[in-house]
Structure formats: C-alpha cells, structure tokens
Length: 67
Image (tube, rainbow, N blue to C red; front, side):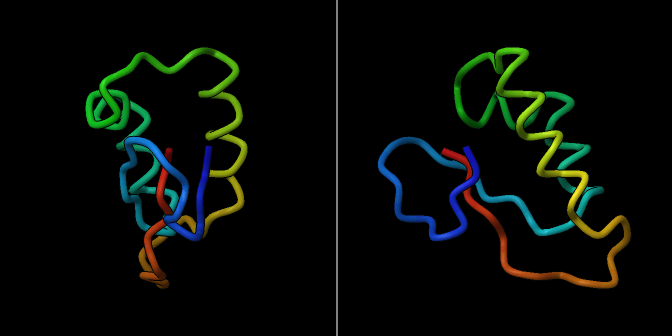
C-alpha cells in the first residue's frame, strides 16, 4: 500500500513521485526491496496509483513509502 506519511509499521521502500521511477520499481526492484512477490491485486493497485503521477522529471516531489 502507498503510505504518503511514511509512518505505517512494516518493511517499506521509498519511491519518488514520478511515473518513470514507479515503472522501473514495478519491474522487479520493488518486490526485491520488500522481500516479497507482489500479487496481481497489489500490482494492479500500485499501477493505478502510478498512473496519477507525472510522467516526466518535471517534478521531483517527496518520495512515497510503500509498506
């Protein structure tokens, strides 16, 4: 789940507020960092969030935490 506060308990991974960062992460590094395999439902939920993000690097933004 996306945790914009970074306060939820559990293992997390920081991702920038940019779609290109999320696209790379969802190809494998995110699952590796979280030490789990993303289910189809989890992947779909994260991809849904990813589509709301800017596509280019015009905005660095604060990173979101994934728990």
